[in-house]
Image 1: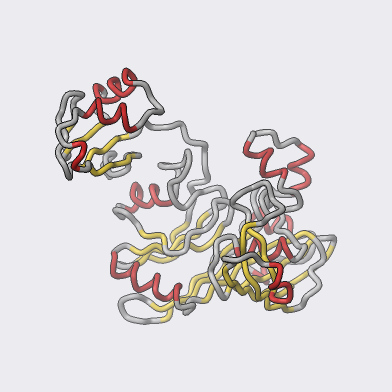
Image 2 (image 1 turned 135 degrees about the vertical axis):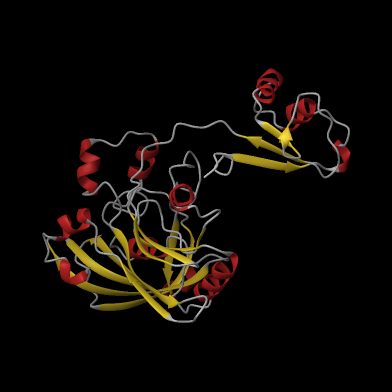
Length: 330
């Protein structure tokens, strides 16, 4: 796999008003987070492409040109790269993703992502990850190898034709043998963290702010003991953070979850690299105990039903061993 294909880069399309402008003048005026001399050094290092060729400081821009900036490589944190291939054919690749492996590039992560590793190890150019999982969530990820397969699979997810089953360890004695949690999700007004959302059950619909999106999750208690419960979660809808936010708002946060766990201050301290030994003991695990265990859908080419399963990870099995044999639930 070419390093160029996996380069961290950004691009801008030149508007007519910048036609005739020199590249150095353009980037200096448009992107002020670096000095003119710093941008000159980036140009001299060959980090800018114009029309696919290396751009010089004095190169002239034309309307419609695509100016590409090849960003410097960053030192990325280590991740668990040991994903397991569960299935592969000409259209699909299905993997069991470990916790602490991001699905897509974002922030400081680029090469240390499932997206990049699939290109490096399996030669899939621009893989489409149909069901992305949070970095600390383990389990099944469906990958489409071509646009037709991606479109067909995405349509199945959008029309709720895909069966998804998760296993979660939660804090507390989950009191419901079975519960269909119907409600909505909206930004949590009580949280200092902007991306955190809150679940509003239908019984409290009047409390939900305007713009809240509907969501539904079927929850089943598999075992509860010693202050921990093993819960099966089947999302009917597919909202971001749906399972974690729902369980948190119900009062049973996912074990090890920094954002939707026992205390969101743990998330803030994690961001500042200030988690103490006591904090880590309170979390119980160094990952959130949520696992995408089962996925069932139709094959995009022949409409054959496919079902995939991923066993419960060792870290979750170790903890769930205190409340029962995990093998029967994996």
